[in-house]
Length: 323
Image (cartoon, rainbow, N blue to C red):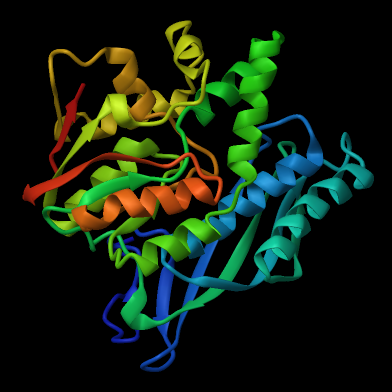
């Protein structure tokens, strides 16, 4: 991207170089556009649920920047030989469910024929240039908060492997779907109101990947306690059984050089911290004296939120993982 994208415009407030969740383009001193696109392959069996997950995942990038979504276009890859238009209608209806919930308009889109179905959205939102959440906004001394449990990648991998046939497995799947279809709108509002400047959503690169990139761009080191991180029940047992997505292993390989792991930390817990999420929650930093009230507000609004660590000092992006 350094070779392909010019980054010298003063109105491009956030571009590709910092690995942020969306681009931000200034329109005026008080308004900026937030622009993003994301699409995914099916992660659940129900078509409408997949549509809801994919739309929540796409619009999450706007919320992760502190923005408000305005308009979206559907992005569809569809196997027209094997999948019906009625099924596609269910997927698109799921996307509209999220749009209606979040208050933005789906104004059209584009479809191509593809052997492997994919669905998502290009989303445009807006944000005040002085109230953005970005990868570079963490400050030493802040407390780190996460707003959703981890384990989505493990649960959806177990679903594909037919390992969720028990009542406990169905309960874990129901929890995962509820988590993936919960939007980050309220979490973003609470984060901005609490004075957060550094935030991102936890998606394909896992908590370690996304929080680690935020630490690097902010020029700080962070500490994460594995015992404090919420995990979907049964996800750990499934991970122990080897039901871990390939992306999780790649995440670990990418972040390993920035990890300082205490000897008491179990390897499987580090794996879960790197678990590739779909439509995960936000992770952001707030002043330590605000953390308890922020988590209480998130919990009251239905989030499985927790304080998971601290921004320890100015640094180069080191992640200290403790038990």
